[in-house]
Image 1 (cartoon, one colour):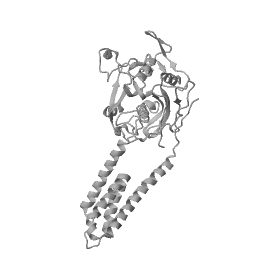
Image 2 (image 1 turned 135 degrees about the vertical axis):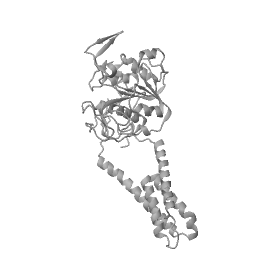
Image 3 (image 1 turned 90 degrees about the vertical axis):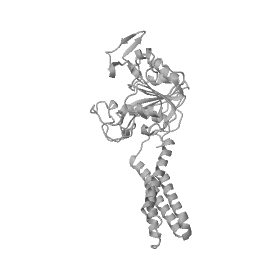
Image 4 (image 1 turned 120 degrees about the horizontal axis):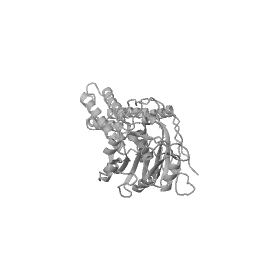
Length: 398
């Protein structure tokens, strides 16, 4: 028995309408609240106005900007200035019409908005579109492991468009030097250099951490330890700034010479203690690992309980892995003409659905993400989230 989780269908026009209504309401409430305060000040005895009037107006501006944002805060400041000018006697000095007072209002509004942004960033638990619901997956026959296979997204990325880079936050159009022939390795961000595959890897990390994009704005946690096998382009910089990040390459000579384990490692025999990492990232590496069973066992060993393994590899949604080269002892038996990827690395296999069975047999619970995300320039592709526990739990706010 299996449980299938579907990605929510979002009507973007309806979603925009839902978002615009509370935004307009915030502006309206900010303006009305300010005028009510001004009216209250107008009926006060003159002796109280000079003492309590500025405090009340500053308070309503700060509250408007804190809870409503910069726009409602500015509206409250302008409303306060305009209202006091209209209600003040012409012989009296208006309370907030002087330029210095108005500037002070705007400064306070800006400060409050900055503080609220910091607060939202530190407590950010917004999640990205993905598997929906809080549920335990249907148990397999063994009763020990759970899995989910979400279907394809309904709107795959098929060309170059202006989207937000989920790594650096840039809004420049992505570049496609392949002219649509290989979008997974293309759709390159002109700012950080990330491609579609990189951003899908970060999507998997974001889902597992409950974070929203871009990763440039993530609040750091130096105690959170991440291992990545050969990370390139945009995201390693940000992960290195925000987490305890190990980015390793495979170089047998340097490993044998005792090179730094933060930079070099053999995934078939990792030099780390048990339950050392909170998360492991691997993008298009395991098809090149000669003894991938050992590699998966090592990943499971070094992950902490409830840690997540975010895996990308060439994959076809067919029952069995297509083996191109079969290791036998110290020899490689070529079943087909050899294939090589970048840096002339030999391809041993193209994975099939049995990959998920193998990971589950080790003790992982596995979620297959098969989707395209237009707004982040992610073309249609597969990524696997393998969690070291007995169930998967992902929550969507949509």
